Structures are given as structure tokens and as C-alpha cells.
Length: 259
Image (tube, rainbow, N blue to C red; front, side, top):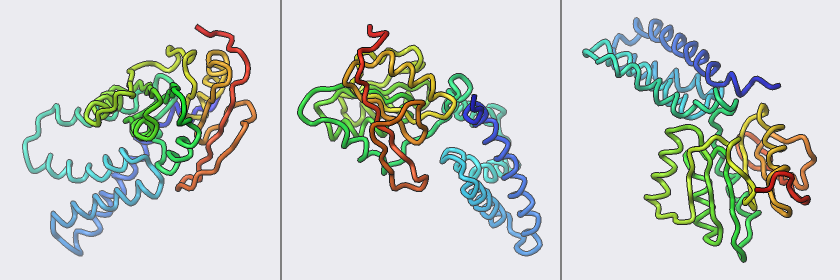
């Protein structure tokens, strides 16, 4: 079994520790050149941000690494309560907890893929679209605006992304969007006309068997980047920085576990 997803969050943490060590070392080198505390803080944040971007850490980790030098400086300058140190860990845990439970880290769908997925959805009939691991809900909200004839369900185990996705659906007045705080393995796909996933290699075998067993005949299973152990009916290249690929699978048979 691929352990990449299971270890993603600890690996990101270790990489962040290394990045902060580099930023700290750079600040020591820069101090004799420009002995200005504000300059050193800003330079350390920029160095940490650039280093995190170079090794392609996810966006939340870019923000964390850029903010840590400033947070460290504020900690030294003022009397910071102990709970402040705990807050960033709670936020990270609220976003990345699915990586520990389902071996699926937070992978947001790149914006260029939205149009590819939208093109698969009909305009002339009702349907249900399920996004397994919907994150902050940006994809389903986009699709819901362009396909008002569809019902869109977001499944998310991360507490913070789920809450934010729910709030977005309310603020944006999206009555055809429902976001559920649910473990993907405990959500039935028996009513789903379309299911989309952008998970991790570790979960693809299981999610494919679940989809094949539960989804109704003539439904469509869509995966991003990570293929399943079955040939796709169509494979579409996405013009994004990751050179992603969208795999389209047509479910032709009667499901084994229809509910």
C-alpha cells in the first residue's frame, strides 16, 4: 500500500522545521549586513515562503511557513499566552485530520480542472453530483452556479474545511449545494449520478470498488490525477501546474450494493 498520503502531514511538518532552520540561519548571516530587526523578520518570512514554494508544499503550509518568523518575533517582543501556540496546531489538525484517518491529505482541485468536470454534467435533466473530499467547497459551488439543474453534495471529514464550505454555501445562496461532515466510507453512493474524487494513491483501490459496487448503472465516476485499477473510458489532460489528468469511468453494470 502507498504510504505517501498517510505520512503527508508529518512529512510537511518535518519539511517546515527544515525550512525554518534555513530561514533562521539566513537571518544570522544577514544581520551583520543589515542589522535591522524588521528587515530580518521580513527577509526570514520571504526566505521561508520561497523555500516552501520550491519544494511544492500545499498553500496552507506556505502560509504557515511565511508566518512563523513573524510569530516568533512577536512572541519574543510581547507576553504571549500559552494557548496562542496551540492555535496553529489546532487549525492544521482541523484541515489535515483526514490524512490520519483515511490516508487522504488535503488536495484542492486546481481551477483549470473545473471546466473539464463541468463539461461532463448535463444541462437538460436533474442529477446528483457528489464530491468526495470537497475541501472548502469551491468546486461544488462553481458547478452549482453553472448547473442549477443539479444537486451537489460535498463530503468532507476535515472539520474546518467542512464548516467553511457550509458557510460558503449559505453566504452564496446555493440551495442546490449540501455539505456533509462525513467519513467517505460511510456515505452511500447509490443515488449518485456523478462522483468526483481527488484523493491519494493509497485510497484509489478502495474508492473504486466502493463506486463500482454502489453507484447506479449509467452513472459516471471521475477521478483527478490518481487512476483506479480499471481502464478509464476517457482521459483528459488539464493545463495546470501539475499537468493533472482527469479520468472518466462509466458505470455500466447494475451495482452490487444498491440501497
